[in-house]
Image (cartoon, rainbow, N blue to C red; front, side, top):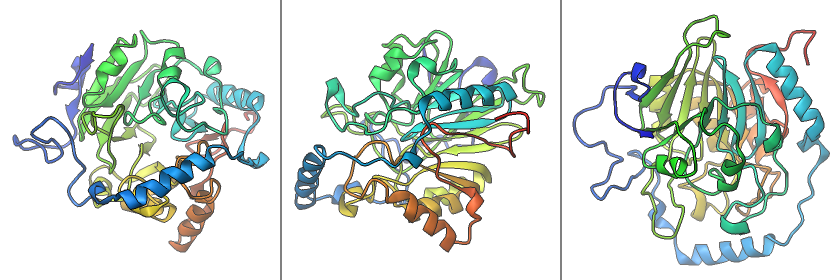
Length: 365
C-alpha cells in the first residue's frame, strides 16, 4: 500500500518537517505536474542546435571502450569481505556500489539508495551501458531495511535490479510523490511517498542505544523526471536527509545547482556527510539545469553546511561528454580552492566501505 498522507510518525506515515501554508506549494503545478524550487535554472532554454551534436556524440562514444584504472575499484571478493567486516562492528558505515547507489548503515538501519545495479541505464537492454559492475553483486547485498529512490530516471531507478532484490515484503521503500505505484506494482508491500519537507521516523532498533532511531526527510533538489516519452515531471524528484543520534547524512540524488541549498543548510544542517553528484555536466547548455559541475557540487556542500563531501554520480556509466575520470580531479581541486580539509573530500572506490564516524577499531577491517 502506498502511503502519502500527512500525520504523525507513529501511524507509519509521513509528517511535515517544516510548517507549510495551506496554499498549494510552489513546486505543485495546476495540471498535477511538478517544477523546481524558486530561483532554480530553467531547463526550457535547451536548443535543438545543442541537442543534436550531443546525441550524435553520445552515439559515437557508446562504441568506445573505457580504460578503467585499477585504483577505481575494489575487487569484488574483497569488497564483499570488507562489507561483512564493517557490519560485524555494528558501527555506521557506507559502501559505494557505483553511480548514485550507496549502501549505508545508520541508526541501526541498512539503507540502499538509487540502486542502478545492472548493465543498462535504459529499458529492455537499451541505453548507456555501465563500464564498471556494481561494487557488490545483488545476490550478496545484506538485508535491506530502507530503500530510497530519488527519481525515476533509468540510471537511478533500475527495474531489473528491483526485480532481483530480496525482501520486498519486509523493506520500507521511501520515494517522492507519485512514484509509489511503480513499486507496489512490482511486489513491494511497504511503500511511502514523501513530498518535499515531509519526513518519516523509523523507531529505534535494539542495536541502537540512543533510542532515537532514524528520521528520513525528503528535500528539494534541482532536477526533473521522465520514464517514458510523455510523462515529464508527473512524478516528483528529491534528495533526502537521514538523521540519527550520531550522524546527519545528505543524499543529493541528482541535481543542478540552485538557491534552495542555502535554505536546506539553514533549516536541516549542518550535515556530517553529504553524497553529492559531481559528474554528467557537459555540455553545459544541455546539463546546467540538471547536473552540477564538480565546482558547483563543492558549493552545494558549502551551502548545506556539510563537513564531509562524497563525490558520486560519476565513474560508472557514460551519460555525457566530459572525460569519465575528469570529475574527481576537478572536485578535489575545487575543494582545495575553497579551503576544505582534504580528509573531508572523499573520492571512494567502487566497492569500497568506509566508516562514517571516526575509524574502525584496531581489531576490525
